[in-house]
Image (tube, rainbow, N blue to C red; front, side, top):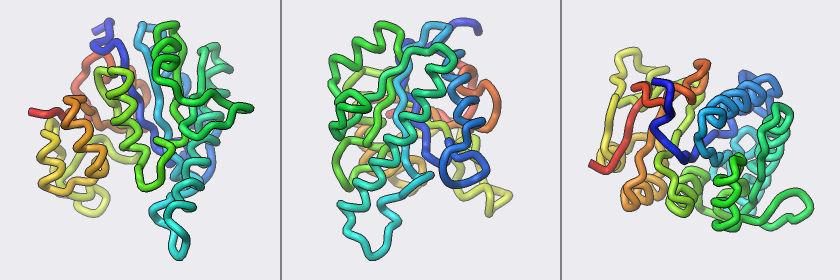
Length: 238
């Protein structure tokens, strides 16, 4: 298949995916490779919006002894660092990119404005959504679902580090873990599968937004997914 099956996507990247084997911070080689993957799907005409996490710097929900709201805002700042790094990597390979943040900081990025984001996409620019939804207690998974609904993305691509889909148990701990090739959102909620948090899952289900969970460690997997190759786990309403 040479033509993409999706015209507009949301690519959800975890902060850990940007840290490589370090587990913390940003691995410039890894972020350069991801930028190269994004360039490939832009070159075949796919409109790309990216939601980045911040877990390579700070995970608000994991902080102990700290006010949750303060901790979540710290995590949002981590996503902005990642967004700027990804923007820099993309622009080095001649991909026009705009960062939009849910927390206003005009000196370094645009504020999130839905119509402006859509216009950027229509002009062929990659749009990176940073700072989550701008609200504490909401994950970047929920942000991906929210932004996908707002910009009318056809699919969310959930790129995972170290795993190639959704399993019934942790494949790193259980060698007999079974991989799902397709799932319904209600199955994720009923089984308590750790794909996305329940708020994000419900938002995708209510807005009928398909989700593809796949591994980012293999070269060209993003390109394969947008061309319709059956890799990872496909999640939909029915």
